[in-house]
Every structure is written in C-alpha cells, then in structure tokens.
Image (cartoon, rainbow, N blue to C red; front, side):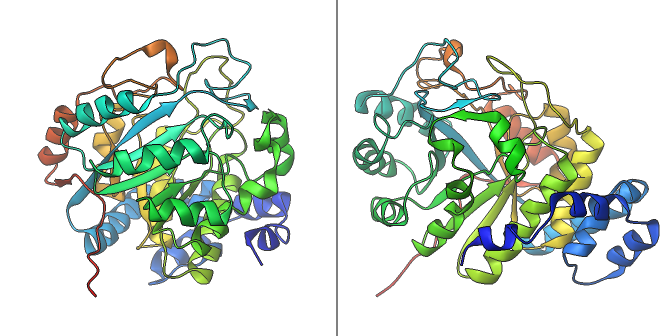
Length: 370
C-alpha cells in the first residue's frame, strides 16, 4: 500500500468540478466546524471562499499561535551541485540549459558551512540537481557527516532514493527530506519532465512512503504552483498529507507552496495564482491541519512575506542563494531560479521581530536518553 493506491482512486476532473461547485454555505459550514476534512478544504480553496478571506485569516492565525506560539523557524538552502540528468521545462538546472555546472568539493562545502554559520543558521537544507551518478550516494556519504558537524538539523532536497538509502543517510545525520511532486496530474507531469529518471511519476509519488518507512523525522511535500490548475493540485497535496498522517503518524510533515519563478529557459505558468489566492491557500491548509508546518521561501517578495507572517507560516528561508558556492563565492549565473526576497538575513530577522515574533535558528530537536 502507498499513496499511489489512493491517488488512483481520485479523478482529477471530478475533484476540480467539486471544488468549483462549492457554495458560500459550504464555506460557512467549514468555518464553523472545530475539525475540518478534505471536503471542507475544497470549500476553503474554492472561489466561493474568497469573500471570507478575513475570517479565514483570523482563524488561521489563532490556530497557528495556539500550536506554534509566536515563533518562526529559519532555515537556509545549501546548494551542493547544479548538475542534473533530467530535462524539465521549468527548472534552471535542466540538462538542456546551457549554464555553467559545478559540484562543490569537500573544501568548498566547509567554506559554505562557515559562511552560513556566520549568519547564525543551525538548520540547513541541502539541495542538488538530480544526477545520481555524480551527485548520488557516494557523494552524500562523504558530504553529510561533514555538514552535520556544523548544524543541528539537516534536511535534503535531492533526487528520490530507495528506502534503504534513506535509512543509511539517517545514520549519517539526515533529519528531514523535502520531495515535491511538482504536479499530481500525470499527463501534465509528463509534459514537463521530458528525459531522465524524473519521468517516473509513480516512483516519485511513492517517495514519502519510503521516507516514512525509513524513519525520517520530517517529510516535506507540495506542488509547484503554476504547472497545473492550482486549486486541484493543492487538493491532492492535502489528500497526500491526510494519507501520510493516517499511515505514518510518528513522522512530522511540512507543506511548501512555491510559485513558478523566472529561470533559465523559463516556463510561463499555466495557472496564475494571485497573492490573495496564496493567502487563501495558506489559511486553508492551516484550517485543515493545525499541526502541519507551513514553509515560505524567498521566492516570494519581502512585502508579501512580511504581511502573511502572522497568518499560518511556521518556517522561512532567508538570505538564500540558489547556486553552488553561493554564500562563499556568489556566482549568480549558476542559480536554479531568481529569488524575490533579496534582503539580508539580519533584515529578515528584524522584520520578523518587528511583527512580534521570535526567530528560531534550528528545527525541533529531540534529545534521546538511554
């Protein structure tokens, strides 16, 4: 059993029609309920919910403060390589893009870690292009222990791996893995993943199952907003989360909601999401699930990030560089995509404090005795 079995029972067109048929009465019913289900979530992301955004925002903020307090966790991405063996239409690292390629050597990694530690981070997200031959398990076996020596919490966003490989990486210090399906529409997925191992839709969709079975502490999921009709794609993310929490209740989960950003060989979004609609989505996720962590990256503008800070977000990146060697060397021609919030880490931290929140520089850390 995996989420694929659930996904196969869900019809994309039926779900889309169901979302768009929701009425104001459905939205009001969902807002009154103390505990909401996936049908309520459909109502909350529907066009019918847009006039209720202020009420949604107030409820979302209250639920978030009750569970997470007035804290925002900070993390930073560390790009190890922009080598990639996949051809994807939306990504600057796509093998078909003529950009400079670089994979950090161990000495480079040490310099990057020193630069990141100087900015006070204690939680880092390792990112690579998907090139399992040159940036695969052998590389990770050497790199992870070196990086873990500098940071309390270590997450990865790399190519999907087998369960036993995740279990091995856990012994080397891996705490969390982010694996985004990009889109839950198989036909659309095929349109945008043209060559390479990433063309295997089902293997990627089963990755969170393998992660949970390997005992990884936290799993991040999400859709790349813009590849498909965003409301339907985001319903599938919610469905995936519901399955995972029901099946692997010991694991923590996070959701990201990245909107397509400019990159080399850039793709125009099929579905454009406004800022107001992204606020609606953030609040809908929180009203559905008071426990899930919601992460907002530097893809979004400074003004937007500051304004939505109180409404449901629990973690943010800051000072991000999306290219290998970005913190010590800063070579922008290697970047995966253009960021929008270019403020310094100190400036973002000050903005968070200005809104009455405390910055937490590491993820949750559990001390084991015995």
